[in-house]
Length: 247
Image 1 (cartoon, helix red, strand yellow):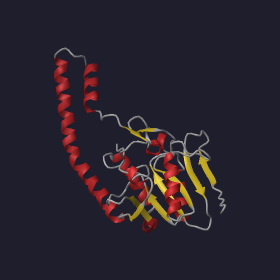
Image 2 (cartoon, rainbow, N blue to C red; image 1 turned 90 degrees about the horizontal axis):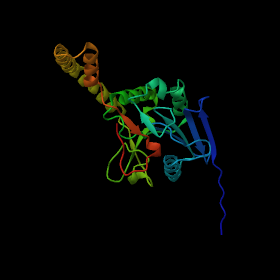
Image 3 (cartoon, one colour; image 1 turned 135 degrees about the vertical axis):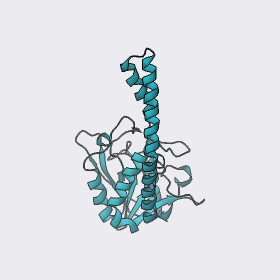
Image 4 (tube, rainbow, N blue to C red; image 1 turned 60 degrees about the horizontal axis):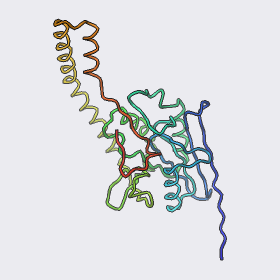
């Protein structure tokens, strides 16, 4: 018969108003390497309380022979549902968020990008990802992605296929940066077409105004026609479904 004991040390940093979590560390073996995991935004994990995402991270890193994890996020606001439509980056980000990411990156032996597919269809989120990766440029050789046995990579820790086993794959840093710049070029090329569309909508609204619509109503019509649809993204840290959520 054998008795084993272990102690998990926990450390967390929150904003004064407790709305933002900037840093979370769990350590169970100080003699083994530390991994930094970067996700979307914090949900409910705190000093003691541990949500499902953090449990999956701890279990998989321990199995990979790591002794500690530091968890950081693209956005520091603690919420179960993150809204990009109604919240600016000033609301979603604490001013010290990037400083804590860099501090963890400096001492971590491994950096895991685990924000899943959220940036694929949202240019604002993709820019935030680019800004973080630019900060991590000198540590790019340490960056990995979570993969599964089918060859998929870039998965979130709550993806069912990897909850109980990670395959860490190299992150193609230079290729990602080139693709980002290419996407910016496509956006710039499409801007003239968008302006034409808005102009056409405005002209229609003006014609409608000559048929008895008041000027104030014209402005409302133009605003509603050209506004972007609302976007609300469920936080991966609290998501227990069977598919990844992308914006």
